[in-house]
Length: 292
Image (cartoon, rainbow, N blue to C red):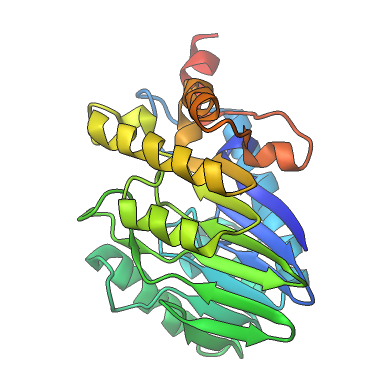
C-alpha cells in the first residue's frame, strides 16, 4: 500500500489531500485552499504559489485515480465546480477531478449543517453529466477489487455539537495492511472519535490535530487538553501517527507534538515528512513575511 500526501499545512496550504494506492487508486479529500485573512493580512505570494502547485498535483493524481472520497464539504476538502470561474487557465478543473470516478461522499442531507448542505446540493447537480458512480458513504463499507473501504458514522468537526458540522473518516484495508484518514476531527477533541480510531487500529493514521491557533478565542483550553489526552492514547496504540492540518496553523505545533511524544513514548510526524520534506508552514508565518 502506498500513501502519498498531496497537500497539507506542512506543505503550505489548507488541505488533507492524500493519494492511496492498493489494487485501486484512491484520492481522498481533493481540495486545497488558503486563508483569505490571517493576522489581519491577505495571503503572501508564496502561499499563492503553494496553492497553484498543490492544485496541479491533485489534478495529476486525479487522472490516475479510480476512486475519489470526500469527508465533508469544506473547500479545503473537495474542489467545487464554481472554482473554475476563478481559474481562467483551468475552467473545467472540477470536471477533470470527478469525471468517470467512483465517488464515496459524505451524505448531502443527513447530519450536515446548512452551508455544507447547500454546497453538497450544488456539487451533486454538477455531477449529473460526468458519468460518476455516486455512493453516500456515512457508516458504510465497500469492497472494490481486493480493497476494503470503510467509512465511519458522522463525527463532529471538532467538539461535540460543533457548528461546523460532521465529517466521515475512512479506513482502507488491502493485502494485510490498513490505513485511516480522519479528516477534521481536530485532535480528536471528541472522545467517540478517539474510540472509532482505536477500534479500527490502522497500521497508519493521518488525522487533523487541534486548532491551537484558536485557543482562548473559538476553542476552549479544555478542548485542546482533551485533544492532547486523546492523541496520547491513540499514539500508544497505533504504530504510525501523522498529525497535520489545523494543528500546523500555529508555529507552536511542535511543542504540542513533543508533549504527546513524551507521554505516549511514540514518534509523531507531520505529512510532509512522509515524502522526505521538512514542514513548510506558510499561513502560520504570514505575519513574518509581511513584516520582513
